[in-house]
Image (cartoon, helix red, strand yellow):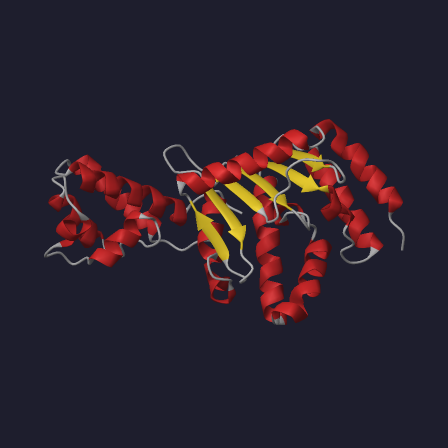
Length: 290
C-alpha cells in the first residue's frame, strides 16, 4: 500500500486549518457562508474532515471571506484541497463496505503509529489470509454477507497489512493480543499454526511490537476492540471501534481518545513483555490438536 497520497488525511488537515482561519476571523459558520456557494452543512462537514470542497473556487471564496490574501498561503491551501479531493487506493471497492469503513481506511493509511487490541480474535493487521478467511466464514451466515463482500473484505485486509512491511516508512504497530483470542480455534489446526508462525515473524520487525495479555489474571480487559491511530504532526489522534450494529465508529474527540488510551495502557502494563511473545506463541502452536 502506498504511503501517499492520503486524501482523508488531507481533508482532515485542510478542515482543521479552515476552522482555525474562520475562528481567527471571528466568524460563525453561518456568517462564513452567507452569500457564498457553500452552505452551513457543507462547511461543517469540511471543517471536521468528512467532506472535501470539490471546487477550488469555493475554497478561494472562503479564504477571501477570512481575509487571507497571501498568494503563497492561498496556493498551498488550494493544492491541499486538490489532494483532498483525489481518490483513495481502496475507492473502487467502497460501495460494498460497512458504514464508516471508508473514513477508517483513509485515516489508517495516514497513520504513522497504530495501537491495537481485540478481545476475541487476532487484530486484522496481523491476520494471515487463511485465518481472516476463516473468521469471515464464521460470521457469514450470522451477518448474511455475500461471497462478494467476503472476497472484497479479504483483499482490503491483505492490502492494509502491506503497511507493516512496505519499504518506505512502514507503519509502527503496537498490538496487545488477548490470550483467549489466541486460543480461540479459528479454522483448522493448520490455520492456527500458520497464524502463530506469522505473528512470530511479524514480532521480529523493528516497527512491530506484540505483547500477550495472559488469561486468568486480575486486571482490566476491554470488552470491545481498541484501535488508536497516531497521525502526522498537527492532525488529531483518532480512535476506531466496531459496533454491534456492524458499523465502524471513528472519532477524534479528546474525551474518547483519552479513554481508549487509558484502556490500552492498562492492558499493555498487565501484558507479558514483548520478549516473551515468541516463546508463548511456540507453546501455543505445540498445544494445538487436530
